[in-house]
Image (cartoon, rainbow, N blue to C red):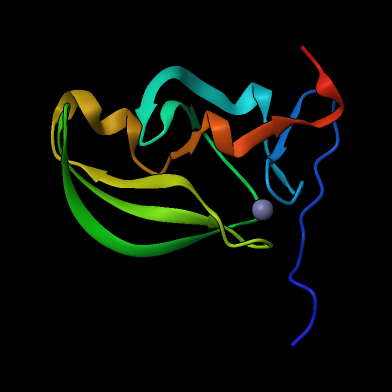
Length: 113
Ligand SMILES: [Zn+2]
């Protein structure tokens, strides 16, 4: 047992977990802001930190069949969104190995705009 390892980001525009405040991602790593999560708007990120990836499952989304896995905050264990493991449609391949985080699950550290 011990404290979970926490990666620390440094920069001007950082998203943090809205529940526990641990760093999650850089604004600069947003690929797209026009995704839909379970709780409204969601962002697609190139990379995130301090999350763990759950079980792989196949889901049929509006854009076709995808293999995805839910992602959880390493510190407070809240479900933040999901990771795209595989997309089966050629037009959706850009999502592979990228991460969806629901907007309501993130806060802007230090309130940047
Ligand atoms: Zn958290």
